[in-house]
Image (tube, rainbow, N blue to C red; front, top):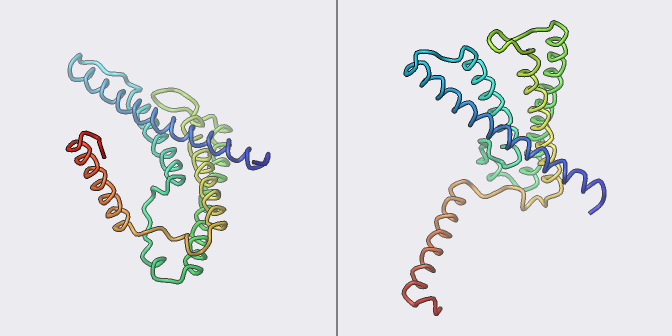
Length: 200
């Protein structure tokens, strides 16, 4: 593996780790904080004034970084019925076009998010309850969208290098049936092993 490939390999791993970590910490922290605040309010008669604001920020960071991670896993909703009806070369061209448009959109949001961030820093905006600089919660926009754009660029290169006949994945129904068949065959193997005492 060359130096450039190794660099992008480690960069991809780092971005994936950051996306997963922030998404997991954000959702777990947000749920825990919201739960604590509800219990404190209705059981002990007092609550944290800043908990609501922080909960919103944690959920937002979790959602944005989770969405960025989903680009790597192909977990976003996609309609492939058209791709399955056209010739493989056309399907590949359409996929490349859709990824290019997605990349441009994500990169543009990241760039304008960065410019807005500079404006917020210049105006020295602060949050109401936490009294922190607003550039901290707003930082999620340029960073998360940049990570998402990087993932889409990765997919674009992957599709570009993949032969046209292998680009279009199986339909969702076919994948579900394949998973059911695999699960059924594994269950059958377990039953046979139980009945034969593992002799087969």
